[in-house]
Image (cartoon, rainbow, N blue to C red; front, side, top):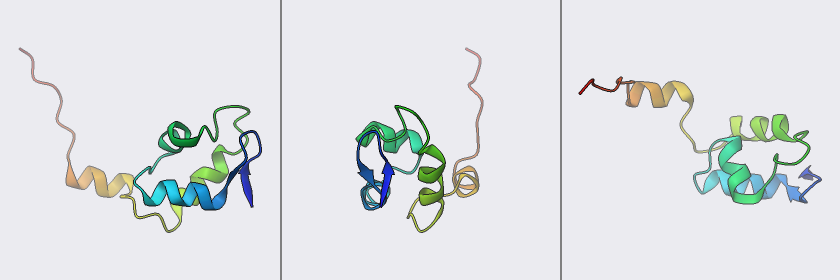
Length: 73
């Protein structure tokens, strides 16, 4: 099924990009342009990334690498 009609990107292609480490809609857009024209597919891409992708969640990333503000020089 097509996710992005503007560029002809399918669900399977989005899943393949996610499996190769592109875990955000912005990373998917960089890989295949999906979501960069009309934007109507961005929510669908977000939904696909939220289910079954082998990507760390925002919470997991925050626990692994706590935010450290830049030190003043």
